Length: 211
Image (cartoon, rainbow, N blue to C red; front, top):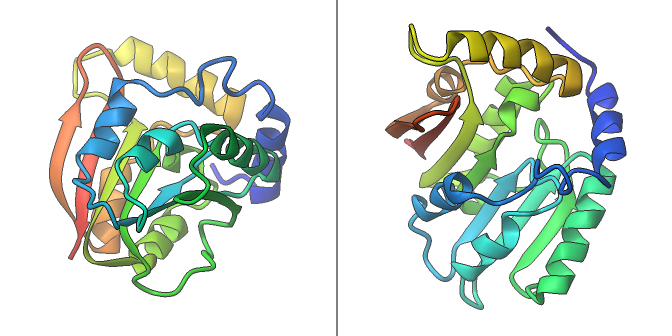
């Protein structure tokens, strides 16, 4: 189900003003866990992929010292503008920034980042395989990459809910929750070191490492 990237970008530009109001960009325990499992050092350089309005960035920046930096990227200019306003309001500009970037062609050199994070991002990406390959490139060897996303549940569990949400989320935002993100991560060269599903939810946490 390929959708043109420009079509997706325009939809997220339109959504940007309402994104947080519907808690689509909110921070919950699952997102905080996705940060915590990275085991960041104070001087870590961290990439937040598909940052949206940057809701997770203040929590991420709290884990960093003056030598660290959280870089959020999104291809929606409207989302990034809101993310940078959030960063300014939180007073963390010295260790956080949001930038407009296409995750299939990131403007960073090989091995720039010590860690990476993607929360509910890949299932909404027009070209997730290309994005994952780029993220692999810009992470340092041994870097951890934490992925929080929504996917197909184990056989016999929440199947009706999954089928319903699969149809609704695709129509609403071109989100394909049938995408097997962990398989794409393995294919790109990541080693999965933790896989956790959350009770009563279709969400899961996949922690991996650049081999």
